[in-house]
Length: 569
Ligand code: ATP
Ligand code: MG
Image (cartoon, rainbow, N blue to C red; front, side):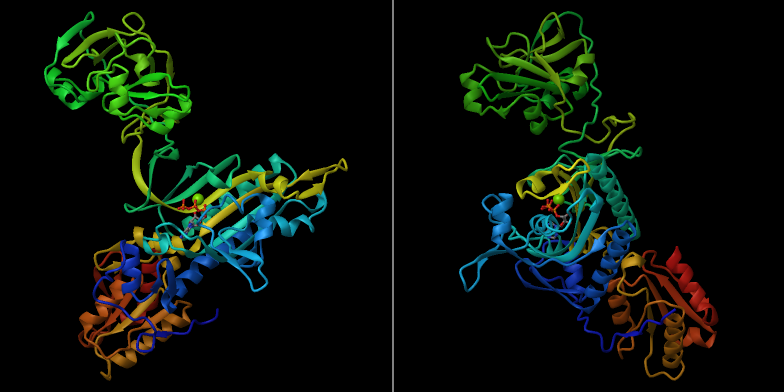
């Protein structure tokens, strides 16, 4: 086993700050700047200082090991890309302002690579000629540049960032399915090895296009994405999640029109009737692509998900107050009984089980109870219309769904033949015909996942690095430098730990104990070994696991085992 060089705080370029930087808007960026790991150069542009670089290397190594062990091969494609490639794929004109374009001295156009589908497809097109050459899986770890409209959240949404992007080439869909499953497995391992809590969610394929995609979400309260998940493994973005609401029935006998003065909202109606909001039907008006008017109904304790509405009713858009008035719809009192002529009704599946509904009477200050589905009114279209809520039943197993926020650290796609067809990248099939490659692509945000780890793993004192990606595993803190008992003992402990194969840093600065403790907590080394005069006289040192916080005394001569055990816990 090779021994790692011992890092010394006295010489390390890790300038820590007491105060939060004023130009950062999220905790990971504040802590990474304060811990002396990154510095902001300009909007969305960062320098990685030595400690940040060490973490970056740890993450890159994990990514590399998993990619390699899953049969992918590393290469390195250029950061600057020829515009002609993008013209061939048809994306030069459509990629938009996120692409930073430039012109060289000869007047040729280029861009800073926002992604590498074009370059890789062009590369293999001339070199993978036959079905015998397939499958192949190639990746690189490279800078990307996206001129984000609003660079923010430090490394989470920067303009220049580091991505691992990989691309698979198969002869057919079955091959792609296998390559995709293999990469998914690698991504599960990467996230696990980084020590992060995460969920894999179904994703929209967005601009990149293709037939199937999943996102790897690191759970963190500050995440931009909201996800619904279940202990059975189901997880989806809340925009797309299919929770099953459980509306209840308000028992009211026959259709009765009630005077409900001043009642305009579901909350007011529930209060008025002294019932649960889930016993009421909430109405939402809109129009479709052809201009037909619609009123949608969902259980009163849910909201309408407009994306889902648009999936059910082509071109669905909510009505403005003005349009509602013109259509004769009564805001705050809409219902399916006695709607104006021609207005169609759609309702969430869950309401199909409710025999009588509580609804607006299409007249200000009046509602119906006991509106019987199928006789007092009918529903033209049933479908999924609700925004998912905590506690809705899981669509897979029926248990209650939980909600959490997440940060997308990776996304994998089945691209299919989108790029190979556009760029005429073909191979010769077994029957002699030319066929387009069936492609997959697999992105992992290396720098974003570093920040995501901090978002998930920190407390009020600083970062709490998972041991696998910490800049070093253990810090040795002598409380009195220059003391003829403490200083040599600290050097000796550091040496022993390093010889045991651990990555060690020693805080050999001539500084107060409180200052050293604060820095160690801020930077977030997983284990601290504290050596003081009094303890050493008894042959003891103190060990603190950063994630736990308490110090425990251990015998000086068992310090290596104690540190190893602390790291394993
Ligand atoms: P987002 O939706 O967050 O903008 P994306 O879906 O456009 O990201 P992809 O094209 O899927 O991103 O890129 C793969 C990975 O690269 C993402 O999962 C993310 O980890 C990382 N990434 C993308 N944009 C940025 C950025 N501006 N800063 C840092 N990392 C990024
Ligand atoms: Mg993505």
